[in-house]
Image (cartoon, rainbow, N blue to C red; front, side):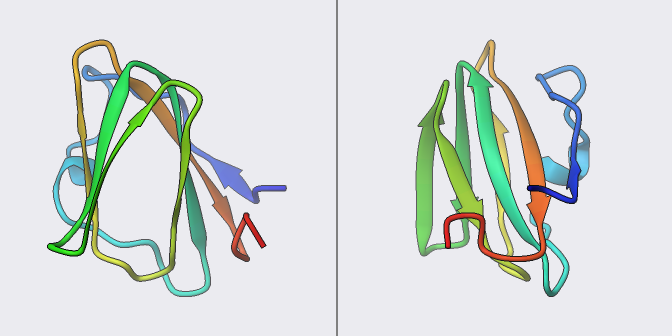
Length: 86
């Protein structure tokens, strides 16, 4: 179970900090959950992934990353104290 979850964001409500490079604190894992449309997840030069409705992506602690939203996209992030896929 996540210990915390964001609200569902869209292009009007997404915090600008999520659109530029940021990281999850040490010891916390994020699970990006796309609820509508498509979201582009990017972690530097090493990873770029387009996620669509119903898809999720694990974000490890302290990895610098950001997201970009396509029109109509909605998503949320759940936070865990362990890898949510382990």
